Image (cartoon, rainbow, N blue to C red; front, side, top):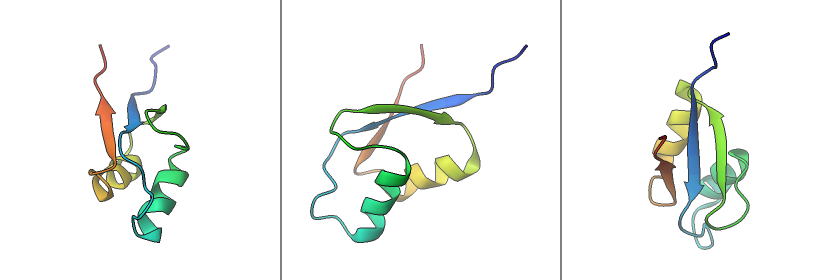
Length: 63
């Protein structure tokens, strides 16, 4: 059975002081702590959320 593609997202900067919309995006991705990594499906929706706050997040290299 083939596994679904996923992306790993890391919170690299604090959303403190960021606009409420940016904070909401970070929380909806499931990120609560600095340097926390979450794995989410590689869909257009999740990619779009990451693109909205690239100054707070980083994609972890899959290897």
